[in-house]
Length: 231
Image 1 (cartoon, helix red, strand yellow):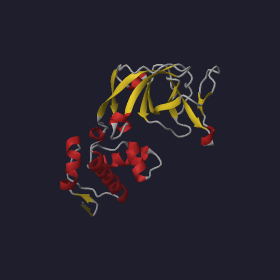
Image 2 (cartoon, one colour):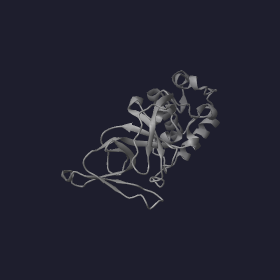
Image 3 (cartoon, helix red, strand yellow):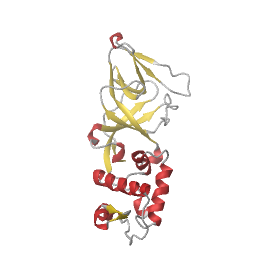
Image 4 (tube, helix red, strand yellow):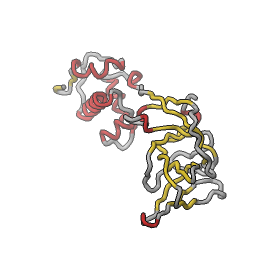
């Protein structure tokens, strides 16, 4: 693929052609780290059919910050190996159903009536988009959730699953109604109970201890603010 720091156009052109990344005569050789970055980009594109984000590139290469990825991309651009503007993220969008509203306060039935669809970047979902749905949040019992506060009107990207790990935010079912809370199972599964914890600026919201007639609709994987999606 490369020799003495030079990239063979016949190898890399197939990765970059559809992204309009320009190829110039390679005059300057690459440093070993620059070569690692370029190889990582090509490998990611070959496996994912898209360019990596700066964060993904940093994680792959063990950089402490995505700014390091950006600096190497600028060096590669200066040497003529790629074009930054063409490198910008062009993700695949998939349609995810919006299936109603769920309370972040007292439990309110999550209506199964389909409201419509939202276009979500596939990188948030992975290979199985049918496992996901969106719920519209209401109430203020999770307005101090981390890393993203959940506020009325937000859309919650939920992966449909019947179990969860301690500390995850779940869409929980209580007597046929639904609510969004942090999930804390009992330390001893034989105790047969779990606690649903709010994280709110409103002291009126208290933990809910659940035993019978309890289940999990799914786990919240991402919170979208109104400005994040065009609805």
